[in-house]
Structure formats: structure tokens, C-alpha cells
Length: 116
Image (cartoon, rainbow, N blue to C red; front, top):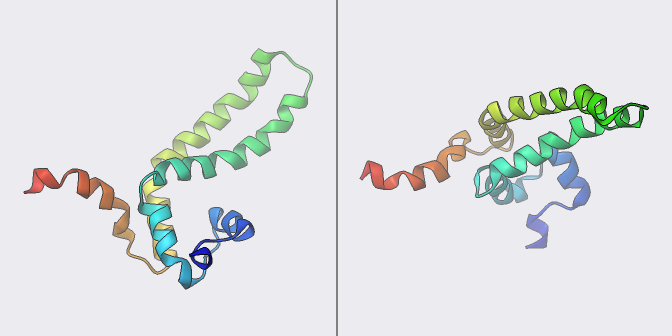
């Protein structure tokens, strides 16, 4: 089972666009389309702008000015990530040779009673 999960370096590079080996396809499918996929996506997308905006907090200014400089950019980046999360996860599934429609599996399972 340990060979089917990425190590720390693989996970970090995978999180930001690198393709994992074919032996990890099941893990990738669960990561991108399983329970909590949107939460994991938002956490991954939220880290880079946080690192870019963090140095602004080292400038001498009031809390209000710091928030005014960084909050709109950070919130906007999270909103864009939320709007494009399905597109990005579909792209990542296709990049790993998986069916992009796996993104909707949980939604279809929740709405199965409506389609019966």
C-alpha cells in the first residue's frame, strides 16, 4: 500500500502540477474526485498566494493597512480557485489518464434517488 501513495516530495510536486506514476492512479482518482476533493483543492490553491502576500505583513503599517493590501488579493484568488475547481480537477484527471467525468461521481451518488 505504501507504494501506491506518493512520498512528501512527490506529493508537493503533484499538488502543483506534476504527473504521478501510473501505479498511483487509484490514489489520484480518490484525491481528485473522492470525498473532500474540493477542500483539498482549496487548501492547495490557498497556499501559494499566502506565501506571496506574507512579506507585505513585514512592512510597518497598521492592521487595517495590512488587511487592505492583502485581503482583496487573497480572497479574489480563492474565489477564482473555487470557480475553476471542477475545470482544474478534470484537467488533472485527464493528465493522469483517468476519466475527467469522475469529478461528478459523488454528486451523482447523492442524486441517485432523484434519477430512479
